Length: 386
Image (cartoon, rainbow, N blue to C red):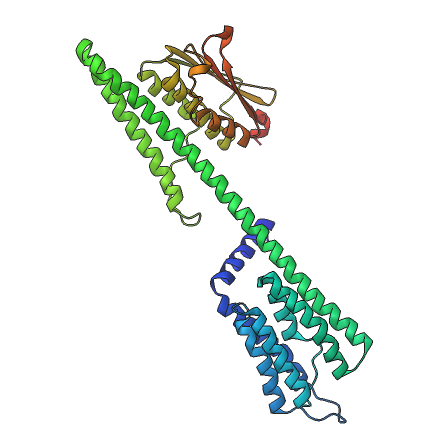
């Protein structure tokens, strides 16, 4: 039995194919309706009834043919079908149909695709045309009730389908907005971090050239390394945007906890004394959480380099009781200089919220410096290993 995800994927592919090939779909529907309306012509009729004729069958086909254009002009197709059906009833003595297939399809289409005034006009036409048709045919209250029910059901299904399509569009737009926000955060984290370090190194380079040439060389090496790292991560992100989910070429994984020591080393090369400590088995984290923690630490350190004027900073990860605590503390100028005008702290809060956690900022220990505090729920080590 196919998994639920497989069924949904197949349904989505079928919907995409239908949207890309509307003429083919409408032609198929018309042929299916024609096949259904052919049945009364091939089934033997009672002897007391007139035999089915080719003119009657041809006129039946004439009532089906407009369905091919049902999406292009729903109301015009409905009117054409009503006219052809009236001609069939009044001019020829042909076999009846168990259901008004063409009318039901056209009413459904109007309900899905047409603007409100056209839908209202269709409802009025049905309230007139159905009783008139029943009066010409059998004058039966039973047939009148049944006909009003099936046409009402076709209209209701059409409105439900329209509501469903609107919901799908809204969901797709929201997903696109979330993806744009995610890409914006990633781009901000990569570029802001790299450019901040490069600026610090570039500003220190001329001073070092005059006082300590060996340090100047190290500064320029750090600029080059930071630029290459930023370009690598940007290529990965652009590759994700260019490649589709199927058949995509293998790409390097997103940065995670294993990349934090290297991140700290790059920041340390800019002249900021950064320490990094962990407690409680933080290595055994889900990949998505690890990537989010990396970006949080990256952005927090970028804020320290850009705004704090600090000499030292500490990155600490501690895991206990199903919670991962991430703290980044510096001895700089404090909250007033922590980049409140940018998007860095907002990005940290958004990343924390995306993983079900919280982020707070404020003065460091004893009111000195600045501290970013993030709490993320994480599974126990035993659960990760299952």
